[in-house]
Image (tube, one colour):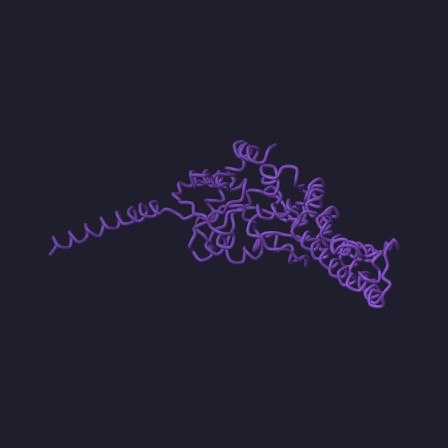
Length: 358
């Protein structure tokens, strides 16, 4: 009996020593799932599927200091927050802005980069190019064709009344008569009225009387439509700051900190899927202003759009980037400590200079 008790005691002692060690080993073997989202220069996806950038370089150093084994996975902007909240991701590392709405469902580390929202607009030269292109747009050509068709229809109707009794002005061959009637309809519509051609029959004068009043309305509407299509791209020249945004076409990313800011300011905007999409629409004249994080706008404009887009110098809303963690995360303190150690080094400044320039 004593021998049995001794054996049990030894087994209990061995288990009490080995189980914590095994548990610790298992914890260290767990690979954490870290979500990220492409947002150059903070997160850049290479052709081989790997990631680099400011945020990625920061996390790599934090993981090394905390001995964290991890795997990066790409997620949408909404999933960066929702995935951490649900426990699907252990952290989200990107260009993720700290705000009250997100802080209410997840935790954040200390900020590692402070920036602000900025406004991108088409450059002056690009606006004039868009105006010139307006003359060759499909919409403009369709409107011009419709107008010519209407002039021909009115002229043909007048020609039917005038071709015999007013042969001097509208006679000759069918082509000559229709050409003269088309000319009469055009000069009457534009109120030029050279007086070189005029109807003499009762039916022709009725048509002329109706056409004169209809043409006034038509030419006013047509002129306004052309002016709008050709100059709407130049409205962005009036965008000098935040106060001009309610009067122009604005775009930003859906569910972003910039969209929350525009909603707070009661500024209407077009919801976009990516910053690149917004910059492309700026360059083509489909948008007058794009609101988003300043360093991201600067990086993409410099590398992909050159002088066609201008970033206004005004910073309209402060933005703090941080790493997203689950609420009450046990890792928060050690990650914060590692983060502060990294951003206090000269190497961190070199990383910023490498991607953002000095």
